[in-house]
Image 1: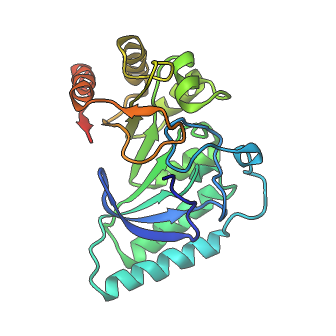
Image 2: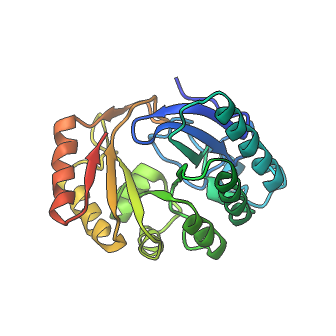
Length: 256
């Protein structure tokens, strides 16, 4: 079953395979997935119509509302001695599409510093907006940048993530960011039309990876129901082979 959209700013804690016990921060409008990509594996389903480019609408949560929600949740966690490993900016779409993303990053970091110093702030991003000046500044403020890179060639990128964005522009933008961790989802399909785990696709992905100067790579496969029902998990053995290819270019890689 596909996951429903998140209905509030703060959610969780989510038990993440990669990030531990994470308190999620959702910057997206409620009720609909908002994203400028259309990934075949998305746990929130396909991106529909106007939801692809709603970065100019007025129904996003206000920066002050995000700040208040994070403050209240961190205070509640402190009062109950709740174990929290991270604050993670994510939600049911692409968080950096928020028109006030830089201001929100500033406010969230300030609240963390005041209430829970030392608690890492992470972001999960699809990387498509990383060249925007305000987004780039906001990304630089958080502690951990988990940036999507599922393919290295235009054909595979379009099959996995949807058309509309240049893979070359994404690679260039990622190369200009500090200390990124690449998150890469590998999937395969009955019949092979959508598959980024075969040698040709992996070769192109490795070449792109060498250009972005990542400090680490997280490799994983399906864990929840994808938008494209015919997608299948990539076997762990193959994921480990891909990880070895990454380590061969002197980049730490972890399989989840």
